[in-house]
Image (cartoon, rainbow, N blue to C red):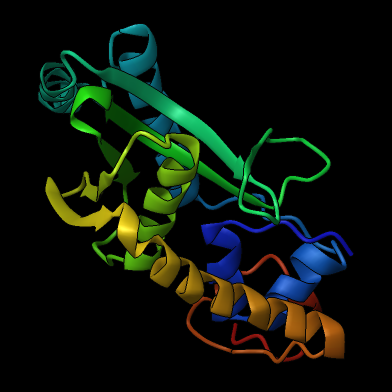
Length: 221
C-alpha cells in the first residue's frame, strides 16, 4: 500500500491508530469538519488572499491587518509566499503534490525567504487553543531545507490568532539528520501497524468529534 504522510496524518495516528485505520487505510469514513475547523478554514483563506493577492481582509479578519502589514515590511528584499505546498518522495527529494512518488506533504501558511541571508521564516496560523507542537515546526523547517538548498536557517513559528501570541523555534541545516531521525521513527510506527494489521484504539475526549465514532466499539460518546 502506498501511504502518504503529513503532520496531521502523524497526529491522527498517534491520537488514535484505530481512527487512522478507518479513515486513511480502509477509507470507510471522511472527516467533514467541525464548526471550529470550518472557522479556521475561513480565516486561513482570508489571510492567504490578503498576503498572496493583497485582497482586503474580511470583516471577520480585519483585525489581522497589522500582522499582514508587518509581514510585508519584514519581507522586503526577499520573497513572501502564501499557502506553499511542499512535497517530498521517499528519497526525501522534492516532487509534485500529486506526483506518483509523493510521500510526505506539507502546506506552509506563510513562507518568507531571504536568499541573500540564507534564512527563511515560516508561519502557521492557529485559530484554536494554544497547544504548541514542535514536531510540526521541525517538519516545516525540513521541507524548506529540501526545497531551498541555499537556506541554512529556518525560524518556524506557530501564530495563535486568538490571543496574538507566537511560539518560535530556530532550526539549522546541520540539525537535519537528527530531526529526520525523530520524524522517521514516528512514521515507521505507522508501517509497523500496517505490517501487523494492528490498530489499537485510544478512547479519549476526542471521540465525539471522530468521523468513525459510529462504527467504533471503543468510542467515548
